[in-house]
Amino acid sequence: MCMSIFYFRYKKSLTICIRENPYPTNGRRAYPINYTDQMKIPDTWRILVTGVTSIHGWPIFTQLSELLPESSLYGLRPPKSDVPDSDNVSSFCITEQAELEEIREEFKPTHVIHCAGVCDLDVCEERPEWAHTLNVQGTKAVVDVLGHNIPIFYMSTDLVFSGYNSPTGGYAEDDKSDPINVVGKTFVEAEEHIQRCKDHCIIRLGLPLGGSILGNKGAIDWIDGRFRRNLPVTLFYDEYRSCIDCEEIAEMAVAALVLELKGLFHLGGEKTWSLYDIGKYVLERGGYSPDLLNGRMRHQEENGPPRIGDVSLNSNRLKTLVKANTLDLNCIK
Image (cartoon, rainbow, N blue to C red; front, side):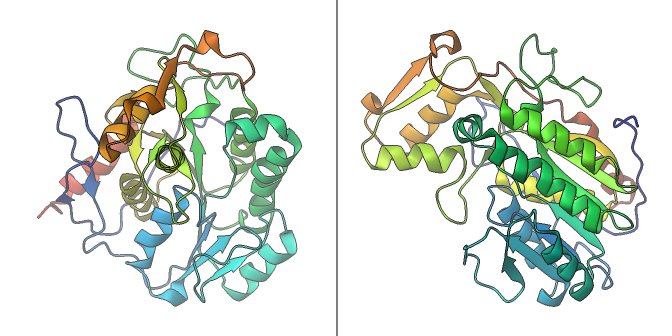
């Protein structure tokens, strides 16, 4: 199957309002689009979101919570987790097919947004079997139980690429994946399971920037947590990602859902950041001591996981498609 082939059926109206990106853009003003105002989701839709405590799953679940009644939205969180505390969220491991089957029979989802998985580079290198279980076997369980006759939206990662000899303008959907670490390799395998679904949409994300529901996930939380405890951070000058605001991830994911997009898409921000750039931003925002931030080149790393280069994403396909279909239908107010 050629993952770069896609189509859509537009049925719902979208209203666009503009808000300013909270993250700096080297003098350029970036205006992510908020597609949620007056967005119409059919009353018959029942949406299941896995991984609601993830850095990208939480904003997606929150966005949908503003658009749907509680009875039409259900979230899955990790075992032993009690956050978020809501009647329409339950806890179990994503690999447990029996639990997924119970959700299928009782909640009867019409759509699934699969956000569950692990992407901590160091931990996944140390525990590759665990990473494979959650990322690959967990996705297989979702596909086996839910992927036969309902749309599956999968939130993947830019780490499916090595960043070596990256193309000008960023990786496009037609570029061949070449992962170099456990995270990337397991997400490539997970994507292959998703492709078995008759109706699927895969969105590869750049690095999400924003706060998390638990305050301990994602680059911003991790770096800020270190600085607040007066602990130093060493980040790479030459490891680059298409960083994207978590709210924009939610807006674009919901827009893709409403537009019923199919196939493979990339979603990153307007700006490419190095990890050191992110650290500098958090440092300056929090007014922390400059002595807490150190930088190094990738070749100086001795004991860590394999380091990517520039995995910037070309997001033109998704952004152009969504904007074109709102413009064509005169839905901007």
